[in-house]
Structures are given as structure tokens and as C-alpha cells.
Length: 475
Ligand SMILES: Cc1ncc(COP(=O)(O)O)c(C=O)c1O
Image (cartoon, rainbow, N blue to C red; front, side, top):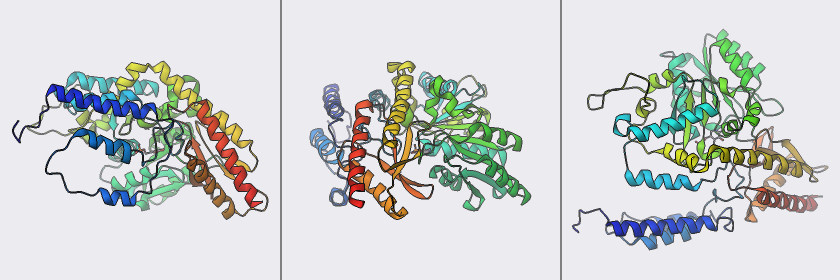
């Protein structure tokens, strides 16, 4: 072997692959016993880890030792069944297999001509999503790295379609509860903060369509060009679903683009019986889905659907003399013409392999189970003494706070914050909080495929015990 030879023998590859698979499987086999939040007070560890690039290679096993024994445990355990923080997902095993395959064979899936059948797999998955979301045949989509990039791409499409060169006159509408990736994406897309309008929400944290209509009228009267409303199919704070149908109708009347951020909630549309909860979602001009949340795929898998597929293509299509000629027929999906990337990974394989192995029926059952678990847990938590349920589950997320006679708002906020910290410190269940409606709320989001009734029993039990201890001290 010369110094320049970077190939392994088949035997070495097999041995190394088996070593990695063994570690991953051992890790997953004990995921229930591992703390839901590792020790992330790790500044000293991170400082100690800084090192120059190694001049010589080393063996695999010591590297795996460091990863699996020292570094992976010191994280939020987002793969744990007790992870009810932020927006979970879990990361199904077929997603990991897909990554091994796609990195192993390393084919070029940015251009149809270079890997037509592999690109077709991604096109199939985008088409499955289109059908689940009940979007029309004119729709085209794009895999992204996550919901943030999908929101960004939607804003670009709307900007191109509705504003053209009138960038400074365009105004964009979101709510006080919209995910911060939307404001960030607007800025990146050249829509500066003074052209972003924040619409108030109602008592259930949903964007107020009447206030939206007023804001649009005010901007028109100022000579501005309202062009885009971003609504939420499930907000991050409280899981609220905006009045999507009403907003869609308003956007049609006013000639605005309606983007729905379904990063958290869109997957519930897979279940026909839950579609009424998301009424109007199918009427959007574009929709963000986040398979690494509600489709339980590993991180790095977002998606966007655009009703007018030509708009997505017009925003991204380019040609160059060294590139294969762009196909001008529409039969075969060509990813680089629909998104900003040329060379890219193969995210669609994760979703394709997962759905092929499980089948959509098991997926629907898992998604419906998450909602049922949330409804049941929310009911039990709402019945606890000193708990006030601020946001019952519209999908599978609920938010609440602690309250007792004579307590100031600051004391309630502090107690609620203490509650989620104490529950999380017990190691089995992790929950996080948010500010909404002028106070601090604890929130529980049930969306990991690994979360089942027994984990929710633990969640309710630990919240009950810790709430009781905190309030008893205060009374
Ligand atoms: C409603 C909503 N939109 C967008 C995002 C951003 O998605 P991502 O983290 O995949 O970029 C999130 C993330 O939690 C979200 O909850």
C-alpha cells in the first residue's frame, strides 16, 4: 500500500462496517435506559477536544470508543422515547441504513441524467407527499436539509413570483407564534425586518385572520406590495394550527402567496381521520414538511411542496455549457432545476427505504398514536392540582403552567421553569418551555416514534410529583 492509497480491502470494509453497526445497534438497544439528557455542561470537554488535524491515521475502535462512550452520551438524547422537548422525531433505523448506502455508493443525485433511477426514487417520495397533503398534479417539490431551508425556499419562490424587482415594496406577514426560521429566511431572501408584519394571535395562539386583513389593507394604503403570508400548521410553542382555510381564501382574494409551515404538523395529514384538524392545508401555495420530525426520519431531511411547480423551477433553473442540457419536458424530475444545490446527498432514500420497509399503514398508526398519547396525557396533567392548561393539544403538543393562590406572575414563571428542569433532571423524560401569552409555559410534544403509553405514564407521574413538591414549598 502506498501513502496515496486511500482504499480499504473488502475484508477491512466488512470488519469496520460490522464494528460500526454493532455500536449503533448496541446504542439503540439500550436507548430506554440512557438518560434523556446527558451532561451537556461540557465547555471543558470541548476545550480539551481541540486538536490539530492528525498527520497519521489511527485505528477505528478507539475513535468509536470516544464517540459512543464520551461524546454521544453528553447530548440531549433526541433519540430517547422520553424526549418530549422541542419537536421530536426519533430517527428510524432504515434512515441510518439509507445513509450508509448513499454514502457508500456515492452516486450523483443532483442531476437526473447521472442517476435517473435513484432520482426517480426521490421523485416518487415527493409524489407520495403530494398525495398525502392532497396537493394537485401541478405540484413539484424539493428535499431540503430541514424545515428552515424549506421555509427559505418558499419565500424565494413567492418573492420571484409576486415581487420581481419590486423587492423593497414587498411586505410579508407572519404571527407572533411563527417559527423564527421564517423571519431569518425573509432577511436572507432580501425582505428586511421593516417589511415583515407580525400579526397577533387569538386565545388559542392562532393567527387572527381579521388582523391580517387589516394589516394588508394598511400596507396597500401606504403604497406597499403585500405578497406573502406564512401561516403555521402547528406552531413550535403551543402546537397551534392557524385558520389555514380562512387565510388561504384571504390570500386568493388579495392575490398573495400563502405558505404553510407544516414542519411540525403536516405529517398528521397522512391520517385521513385527522385531516379536519388541518383544514385548508391542501389549499396552500407551498407547504413545508419536515420528515425528520413527523415522519421520524433522521436529522437532515426536510421537504417543500410548491403547488405551481413552474414557480419552483423558474426560481432555480439555470444552464451551463459543461452541464447536461436541461430537459424541457416535465416527465422526469431533475433536482438541480428545482433547488439551490447541485452536488448533494440523497435524502429521499431515507424516506423511501423507511416507507418501503414499514409501509404507510404502520406510519399512519404511529402518527395517530402520538396524538392519542398527547390527548390522554394532557387530560391527566390538566387534572393535577395547581396546573393550568394554557394550550390543550390541537395536534400532539400541549403547554401549561403552575399556579397557586397569591402567586405573582414572576413566581409562577419561576416555578414552571423549575418544574421542567426537575422533571428533566430525573432522567427519563425531557421537556422544555417557551414564552407565550405573556408568561412562561412548560410544553410537552409527543412526536418520537419510540414514545408509547408507558413513557407518557412516566411523564405524567414525574410532572405530578415535581409540581406537588414545588407548590408545597411555596404555599
Ligand atoms: C414550526 C416549525 N417550523 C420550522 C422549524 C425549523 O425546522 P428545522 O429545525 O428542520 O430547520 C421548526 C423546528 O422545530 C418548527 O417547529
